[in-house]
Amino acid sequence: MIDQSLVKSIQENYQKTLSQIAEAAHAVGREPESVKLVVVTKKQPLFLIQAAIAAGVKIFGENYPEEAVKKMQSLGEKTTVEWHMIGHVQSRKASLVPANFALLHSLDRLKTARRLNRFSAELGRKLPVLLEFNVGGESSKHGWNASDESRWEELLPDVEEILLLENLDVQGLMTMPPFFSDAELARPYFRQLRRLRDYLRGRYPQVKWEQLSMGTSGDFHIAVEEGATIVRVGQAIVGSRPV
Ligand SMILES: *Cc1c(COP(=O)(O)O)cnc(C)c1O
Image 1 (cartoon, rainbow, N blue to C red):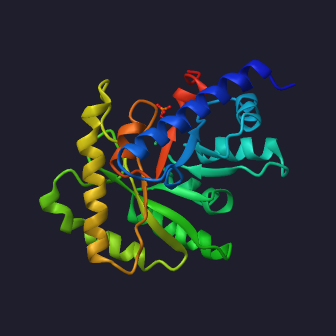
Image 2: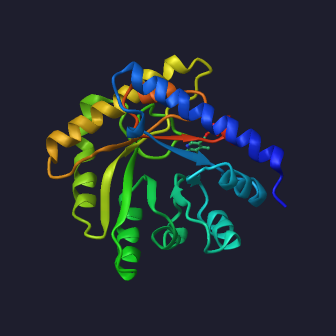
């Protein structure tokens, strides 16, 4: 049985997040529909995902391929929700991504790109991906280091090779900025990712680069003001993660 009080609380948080997204979009003259809301459920149990589906959640973000695939299998075929992979993909788990996810937000190195390209080809599929950049330069974060704008040119060889992989469809960029308790302090990092997107767009105009995946529970409103087209919100909607 689905816990109706859990459904109600997720529904309230989900709707509140959607209206905060709309408010932030309107503040900068954007359409709210230009922003997708991904609800992050890493480490959350199956019953919570079932409640979230009942609450109207359409897109789930997961960080660990095996955990996510187990959840998908337990839910069965009847659900029509979309699954996004948002965490670091280890080489030996790479085959699970093109087989199970609609979008990979966190493509963070060339070697993984080559593997994903091969597995996608085997499935006869073109996998939509975003390139993850580490705009804060923190050693704990994945992605290409893009903190120093004067060195962006060094990113080009990897980007260029990935763009040539026939079974990957590069749709944009993703980042996870440093954590601040004051969300406003994350703004320069979101802006940096958008500027990097504009730079890459200038270099490779044949690619649309339309997606910017940025912003989490504490700072998604700032990310939307800075151009996010996808926000990844966990705790603010489904509560804190079990440890
Ligand atoms: C966990 C996670 C999120 C969501 O964070 P919350 O604080 O729960 O909103 C978003 N993006 C990535 C990459 C994550 O790992």
